[in-house]
Image (cartoon, rainbow, N blue to C red; front, side, top):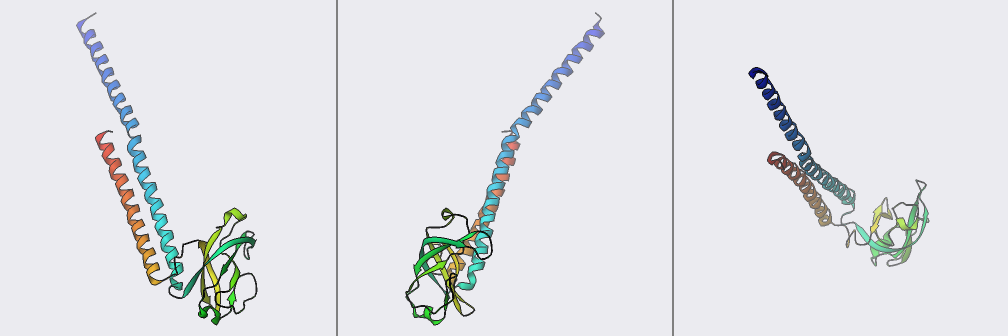
Length: 207
């Protein structure tokens, strides 16, 4: 074997070893990249969840804003369910008592179950809830109803889980909901940005 042939073989094997090192490093980098990718995606998902919660809270405040300082809240216990008036699902029926406020007797009350009639303050009533479902388990067993005057009639404008409306809807209630929505949005942006930043750091450090 000549000296030239030996040099070629050594060069070939040296190149081959170098290629193996580069491939091994590439595979290692590809496997490590899953960690920062997962961290980044987790941050984005959590940020999106918080942003959606913020949007829902803001929309809720927008819907309730029209009832601020002109509504009442009553508590009710689940009794039965009845056919929804617009869909093929059902609404819950609750039993509760009207507020002991003479102002509630200044106009007819529409329970959603019978023709409107002028009630007595503090009278026990049954009323249709606003939630929809297909079985009793879909409804709150104890719920709060928001009452407001619409078109000259006292109506149940919304029902939700007990305690959701507090002692009534006020301007402060709306402000609190909107501040909460803003904080949720800021938290969502912070979580998303933090997740992306930390993912880039992991990738840069080769972790």
